[in-house]
Image (tube, rainbow, N blue to C red; front, side):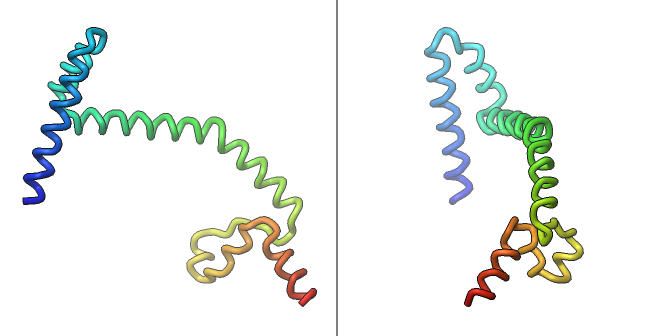
Length: 113
């Protein structure tokens, strides 16, 4: 019953999207493309493009920033390091060393109390 409802939902959603695109003269070709391909496959293609753009943006712009911030933090805090996965699986509490300043401030807090 649930699968039948989901199938009918996609047919109705495809119909509504195609009709709304065909009514706009500039988007008739897009509406016909979605009608031939199917709305679920079209959305999957859009998702793949969004993932590719996000990956490219991360590798090109964000990763160099994160690496420079990481090197600055390693110089600034002697207790900061990013442990390997094997080390985390053996000692789960070591993940707190990857949070900048947490270990140092923790010991200061312990001394004050």
